[in-house]
Image (cartoon, rainbow, N blue to C red; front, side, top):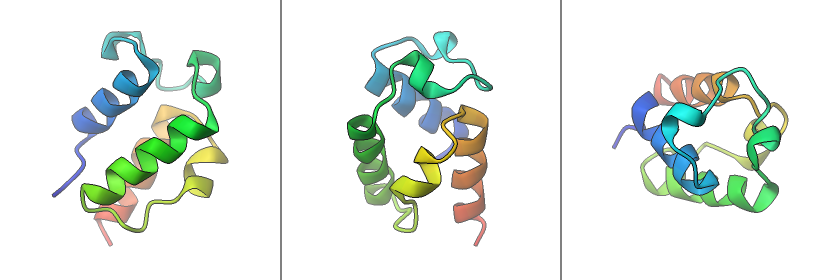
Length: 78
């Protein structure tokens, strides 16, 4: 299974309890309520969706949506 950009945005919005339209791609997700527990939940969810290589550190070091989408896309193109 592939984690599409749309699915990733939906997953992020759901875990932050916001509408997808409220997400800002270039703003640090910590400013939108992201924390380490939520990142781990997303990592687990995306691993189960078929991306076993996604890891906490890759997402935690830069918490902008644009970075996360790049990470996911890179992992899927390997």
